[in-house]
Length: 144
Image (cartoon, rainbow, N blue to C red):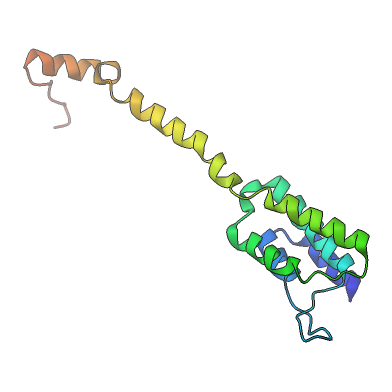
């Protein structure tokens, strides 16, 4: 069962789905609190999420990060090394917050430059602008 789960994790290409899987409760602990999967499985899921975020940083959505935040305080502590590694992976995932917004800025700048270029009618439509300045009508199209 564990190997099949890890194979599925490695094949999943949606970090959002992996974040939901990461935060899924697998039952109640002795004190009645929610429990997460084994820490080694959680580490594999967190590794895959980061792999996907590094490849396409704009996928670090608020809901993905909220799922990871919700799960962090439920992480099993049976292995301090694995626990520390998972916490570190979650911190790195958080570093991708808002990257998609910053990536969109060059596009906006490009659109602004295009609209500024289009403001000079003499540069883009010299024949029409010279005709209008002379006060005459443009020549009629033979198709009219």
